[in-house]
Length: 196
Image (cartoon, rainbow, N blue to C red; front, side, top):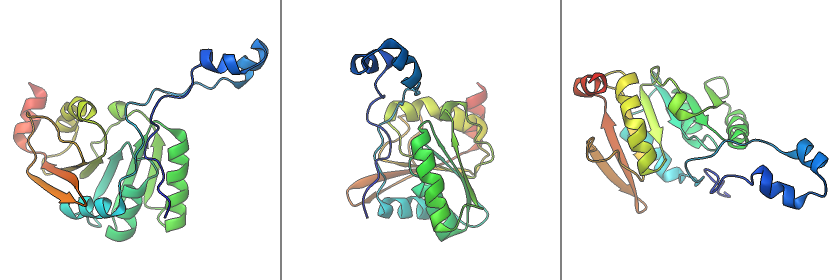
């Protein structure tokens, strides 16, 4: 299976750079597309890691999983197809969201999942019982207060490759094919810390 890139490595060419490639300004106005800046490069999570992330979180049919920075949707689709969960994928890149919807359709789980073009920092994740991540350390630490505030006590968080900083040490870590997976649960102390 060919690996699909998880996130774009850099923002797309801005209007100024695009203008260098076009012969006339009127054409520039017709062809410029505004694309949001992406915080994280798009790199796929290997399927073995996806499976282990879902196993660590004990994802089942009663779970609602949110994948923040979902890329091509593979975690959400696998959670629905193999574990019976419902899921939502969030990504800034509309191209990735299109791929995710197509992958859900092909897997026969389009009725159990949804995908949205949205900023993960502006997304309400309070309905989630499980949140999965493959972001970057600085993004994880910025996201941590939001998870503490919005998620219910007992909700699980699983991250591929990066932790949440020293303020929130993982409860479990595992290695799959040389890649580290981190696991946490939301506790009452986190809810109190979010209010402070």
